[in-house]
Length: 277
Image (cartoon, rainbow, N blue to C red):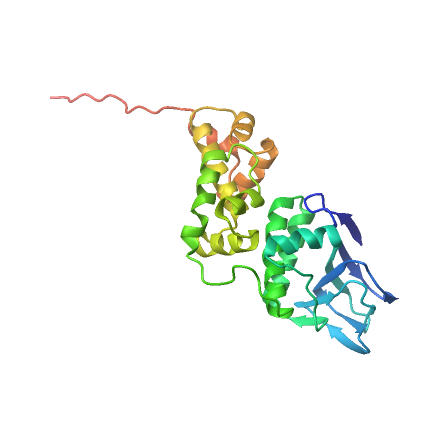
């Protein structure tokens, strides 16, 4: 097991577990608990009945809701869990556009798309990519609430996505070399962060954070072509350090910034030729 708290979202703690022959006795959490099975499965008890949690299923337990669980048939249960205490819940309610705390009428939610989104968010948090994980979690929770809590979200009407995100695009273009938060982008567009993420995906195919990273990568590429060192290009283009630039550069382009810069270090001239008669 690994259990940790997330600095990017106070009140959020996370668990990654790989269990065999383990039993959770009946208990409660003050937090909203979400768990997604990656492999294997378990049996869980809640609301007077026992059910099976399989791969791709999301478990949701409201704060102070009694539940228990155990592995079954000598099967491994590998899962990832989110524990959202009140500070995190309050922040996320505002970010997805809710005025009251959501409640779930069922504990086992068969929603593979939602499960994949939650697993992706959890993996980003574990990799230390808090901002990207936060955005993914906002999007996943918006989906969770609208599909499974039956609660309307603010501004849920039709959106002209490109028009919505124009102020955020301009903000990123102007300030990519300094910290730019999701909340700042949403405020510039006068929408909730959840609606901003939806509009960004509809228009660009990327989340706001991913768009910011791409803008910084393009800026870093220009600086590297001009002869700046990777370390200086990283800081100048808005990355926290060269390691962060390296990580994103390799992910997107398949080569390191140093290799990229090396290709532009030499100026080639055509050799002179003469005509023999």
